[in-house]
Length: 118
Length: 112
Image (cartoon, rainbow over all chains, first blue to last red; front, side):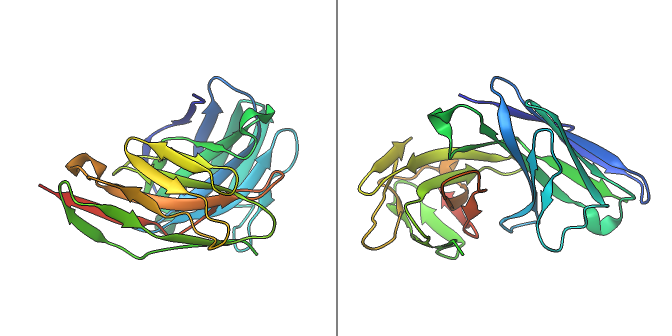
């Protein structure tokens, strides 16, 4: 099956620093990757949709200058949390949709990255 | 817009009990329907899916049938185990390159 990895799995940083999270599709090419945020005991909140080679589309209320998304290739998307603050602490999950039509409407999820901002 | 409604948790069951988690949806057209499972501290894993009306998705003893007439996709398992304790998310996907729409999740705790 299709595998999506995320790195790092956990990160602790000081307030004011920037953190980069990588999302990779390991055995397939992804036209589109999605970034979600999950608060404790809550559902997933879609932050943005990332298409290879173009600008990300952000959901309402998500600051695009704070959450920078780069989808440089068909296998890699990155989320950079700039000038992180404690309220940015959360579980960030990416997912990827395969290019080929076999699973066009299925998304494959990464294992998530837990960010803690002190 | 499209939406998914699933029963509020938490649900606590004894081992070997029967499980039902209700899920209904609102969508234009004919979406694909999914159940995802999230174990503590992990990302989401696809549990099962159905892409058209009357399809039954099944995996690991879990089943769900795509009911167009009732716009439902209820998750069932005949005999739950402690290892099934997790959060279960119902989701739908419209056509094209749209993201999944998730329900709020249902936390299941199975006790021995």
